[in-house]
Image 1 (cartoon, rainbow, N blue to C red):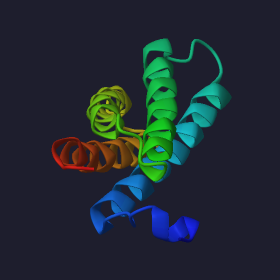
Image 2: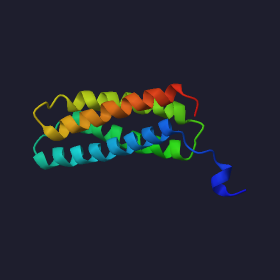
Image 3: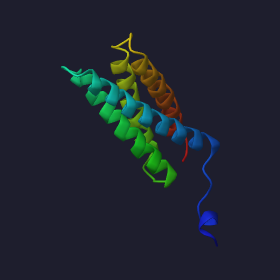
Length: 120
């Protein structure tokens, strides 16, 4: 049996969730870079939310791709981190980068919530 045949293919929903996680991860990284370039007293609460969300989304995607038995629980935690990050980014409504990040976070949270309730 080939290695590819030994592992069940990911569902379309799971593939979409992995893509949403990776997109959210990169958007959070870009937003962190943008905040750091602003200098001064960069909003630490927003920075922490971005860091948590960036790490959580990357880890969540990795766990789904390797079919971890903890994927559903990770998706639930990831959705929470994404919700918190979206809220933090919305505190800067005039910054287009933060608005893009909030949108990516909301999309990822929605998909992760669906995966948390699904059988992996």
